Image (cartoon, rainbow, N blue to C red; front, side, top):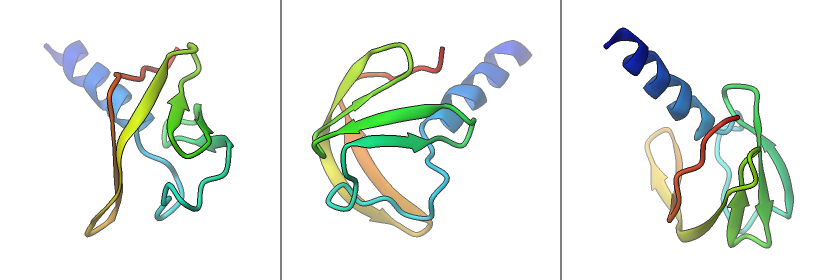
Length: 80
């Protein structure tokens, strides 16, 4: 059970970008560093690709939260 919890934390840190707030309209195509030190690649403000080559579509962008911005995607992205 402890390994499961640690894996969940590892996956969640892959979804967090180190910058304070990243809005889709500000993000040009290119890499962004995640909290776990990996990178994800944004394409034309509509797609994200992980380090394993999986691509996810941004379904809803720029949902403002108290401590960041949320972008809803349609595919699970995982670190290598």
